[in-house]
Amino acid sequence: MFITFTIPSGYTATDAGPFNISGLTDTFDVVLLATGITKSQLLTGYTVDTTPYTIVSGTVASVGLCTNEVNYVISSTTPTPTVTPTGTSTPTVTPTGTSTPTGTPTETITPTPTGTNTPTETPTTTPTTTPTSTNTPTVVTPTETPILFCYGYNIEGAASIDVEWLECDGTPNSATVTSAIVVCAQNGSVFQTGGEGNITQLGECETITPMETPTPTGTNTPTSTPTITVTPTFTPEPIGTSAYEAEEWSCEYDSGGVATGCTMINDNVIVEMPTSTSPVFGRFYIENVGACTGSIFKITGNTISGGPNLILYGTTGHGVCTNACQENCQL
Image (cartoon, rainbow, N blue to C red; front, side):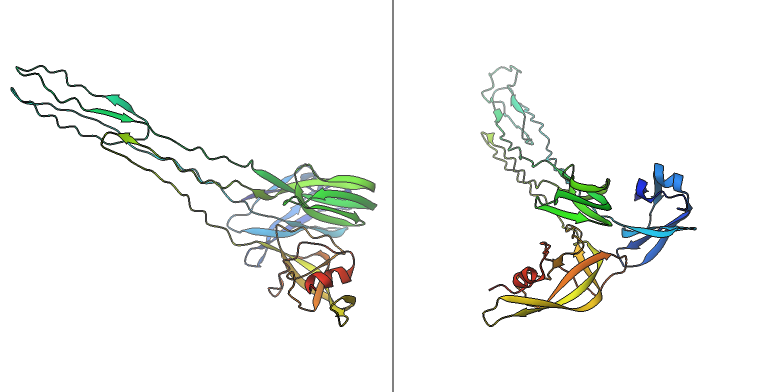
């Protein structure tokens, strides 16, 4: 796989560079993809061949007088299969005999021929065999949902920027960004609503493809009635995850099950979230709705280090911790 890295203008200070590019594989191994890349190469776009690795995230780091790094996240796509029914039709009629001819038709049916076979040989006695084959196929054309592409966006505040966007599943989201975050949003749905900063579109982060179920059928008259049913099999890929730094908070409830408060119990934990979810830094997320685990997690930043299989499946980012506690353990 080829990945092109482009650094935003906000990272082009005089002392920036040279740069090293590293990646985290799908087996949580850190590999060095490129070293000594100049600032001008990254401004125009520097392409790296990551074969044989499957890269899911990583960093671009300045290693000269200015030392800083930027995280990136990569999502994979699912191909769409193509179904092509085939068939062969070769009707053959061979009448023989002097007084009583015999017709021996041989035919193999496809969904779309229409033919009439009439023997033209005229012996002493006129043949009486006139087989006629008529195919009337009916093909059902599936209706496809247009492919929806989602892209990663790097959002930087200077000193803060207010933005709104649509998640890849259509859920609206918004944030006030004071440093830099990366979100996965529908193409062209990220808008600045206030403040100052930069919004940079990155590569594809998710693709929603249509599901096909074509069912062509054919009917042949007089002797054959073929029915062709094609059902493609789709093999889902394993769910991809990205790692984040977070704080763990414990929830407090009253006797009626209403969340009344929360307390931070660990300020440095590593969690993972599905790549289809783009968390907002500084907001609270849960493991599962109604799981009543007693803990919620405040996302604080990106990391390329994998966590101990602590995956957060909650997709709603709560600005108030008690709201997240109530979703974690619903009444």
